[in-house]
Amino acid sequence: MSVTEFTKRLLTYRLSLIHLKEIGLEDVYSHLLARETGYSAALVRKDFSRINVKGKRRGGYEIDAILEAIDEYFGDDKVNKVVLVGMGNIGRAIAQYKDFEKQNIRIVAAFDIDPAKQRKKFTIPVYNLDDCLTTIDKNEIDAAIIAVPAISAQMVCDRLIRCGIKGILNFAPVNLKVPDDVYVSNVSLSDELRRVIYHATQKTD
Image (cartoon, rainbow, N blue to C red; front, side):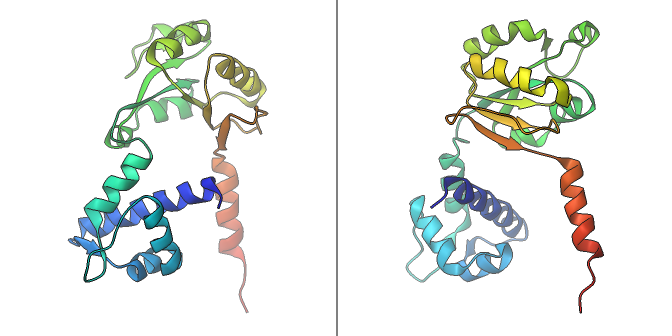
């Protein structure tokens, strides 16, 4: 079973469970969550078993118990620190995103080659990239966000890896080359929008 697909499903469950909780539900059955997420009820139960979530005697699961188990699996019971490279439009938007705090994610620092951005006051401190090793080592950081132009993305990626980073969320429009022990998730807003437009404009018989 692919760990990547498993973690993707867990986060899909989490989003649906938060919605169900907001509308007043305390318990959920696997078939309801299957309908909400598009997965099979059997797969839902199998995934819950994998994170040690047990159903109630009369059937169903406690929503709070599932959310707690998912958060624990992802380490959300503690503060997860990350760094951000690039304080352009996308970088600034990421730095100001408030929902990270709800997920116990904290961007502790950003890096940018522009001295003006290093002097300007943002919600997080902005340093020269030369300071990344000290910052990453001091805060024991394993993950980073890259939001720089494509031309410099691989160089930034290589430098972060040398500083000990093992996970990268990449917003640069380029496929990064990394060692097998480093995980990269590429986010292309234009590609995602192209997919949406393509499927929206397809005519059905």
